[in-house]
Amino acid sequence: MRGVICKVCGFISRTGSAPEKCPVCGAPKKSFEEREDAIKIPKDANNLSELEKKHIPVIAFEKICGMITEGCQDAHVKIGQIQHPMQSEHFIQHIDFYIDNEFIARVHLTPEKLNPAAAVHLKVKEGKLTAIELCNLHGAWIKEVSFK
Image (cartoon, rainbow, N blue to C red; front, side, top):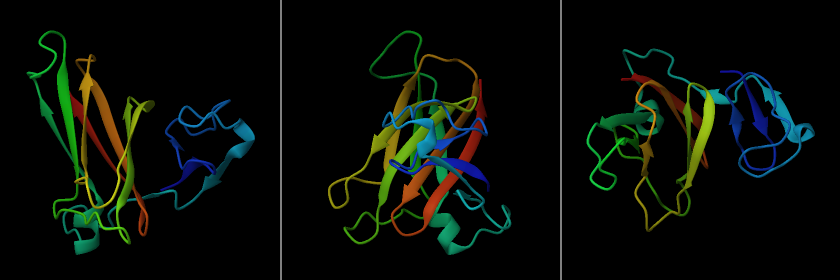
């Protein structure tokens, strides 16, 4: 899938063009490049390969947050139907979150001590949540889910 990527930090713009500055690292617009293979998607969504099952994010929503009692719902993201490894030689570097294609957060993951998962506490009650993960060996993979 085509995308516009920050060459400094790997942020992928979901708007189709480079921002004036990267929302993750602050790099200027000239630091972005368009790439045909920016984001990996399954060849057949109904028949995933083992590689795809280990890389495509899985998103779940919790309508009642256990930490913020009012006006919050949680979005939980784990990487893969089959849990992705988190070893020093093969791991998920980060997960980026977007609502309606607008970047909202990045969670950095460290191999060996963390599982390939993250959560965000949403104030927004509806929209399209996108999670893009970056595997150090197999690139960026995407999942989008509408929520209400």
